[in-house]
Image (spheres, rainbow, N blue to C red):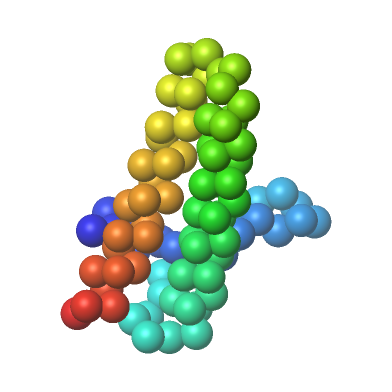
Length: 85
């Protein structure tokens, strides 16, 4: 399900640049990338949940969440699919 072999390991706080790797299945870097993706998804879910619970966001503000939610969901589905292989 992943469209790119590049996996994010997060952002370097010193430079502000995102680090990407091509991770070997079952390897250490894949585990780090999976952990980062799950952590980022959990933060995104909490943020969107808080916005929805407040109930004051406009349609345009809610629409802004669609691309990051789609990306996070795709990443998580890709991890699940890779585990099944």
